[in-house]
Length: 519
Image (cartoon, rainbow, N blue to C red):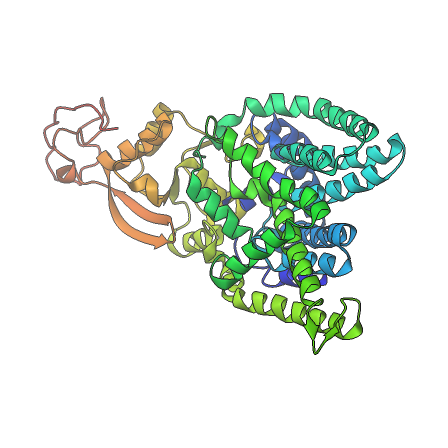
């Protein structure tokens, strides 16, 4: 836990939030009624997490505080994985499993992210430990803590439900008696009843994950490397060999192998029909990999301790053997962490995340003048203004009709295509903040408002300045002079005087015959 806490706190203040973190940040700062209204239309799957973060950010709304719950959850998970290892394979394997979990780069990545995935991993590890205690316990009371933790974890994120299937396989492999099946069945039934309303609501919001694609074998390989303490080289292949050796530890394998394989397998299989899989959704399965590697290392140490030297047998219980094994384990874990140190350092850079909204805000402060209109393409780009409003206080969001908190949406309601054209008609210059893909001529957005933005900019404006930061483009568009209007496109809105924008003394240009917009 100390190792995980140190890794989690190292570089926690990256100096910028990325898109999903900014959603947590701005939604959690809304009032409880506003959060409740939002969940009726979007992000119901994150509802409990938003309410929890609302209480957390009441203390201090900042990036470090935003990520602290994930650091604490990852720290708790490392301790729970160690406790599972102790219960299944002894103190040495437990210690190794906990440290392995802590130094795996994927763990550190989500320990420093203001989302719910590290908390879900803690819940699953705790539920698995409670499952083992209930199996060894007597009476129905032993199942109540298990059912409570599983229910809270699944409400925290709906895609933690496959852990129930993993636990079914564990019970089958352990060959538990009928009374255990009965207790687990009652607990799982209560969890299913509690989740039904959330499942029903989230089904109506499935468009939020429409960007996911069906995973192929390449995603399987990527997940295997993410679950290893090293994604390539001797560390990766050594971890695979130790996992294979860990399968010989029957009780450990009965718990760790289903946790490792069943949830990703279910989501990948379902995603062949309806994509629902992403690596972060199965972060909690990483605990199974750490347990298997540690169990394999323990078995190898046990075998080496029985090798004869000079006709004498060194026993595993002897002091010298324990000392040698302990030192070897420490050196191996330390070497693994140092080998992956560049990966950990890179992950603590804001540039390593999908986007850095703080950079967008800082760029806006430097380039925009007070009163300048700004247009976000697509509208999700408004997250930069919601997360870092300082850079946008002086400018005017020309497309926004109703703010995000008031409208019960993530980034606000925008004007209709007709209203947007009217708002842009008198504008001589407008700043455009766009994702790089949105400026590709081949991109055809399904939203008519987004199509209107691109059409008006293409016909009536020309680019004066451009600034690029990562995947975000900041452009200054100025209105075309009448001579610059492309052939076949009217230089003024229909019905307006042809001299409306001409300098004094310049004769009016003949009106060109309009043609359909190139959407």
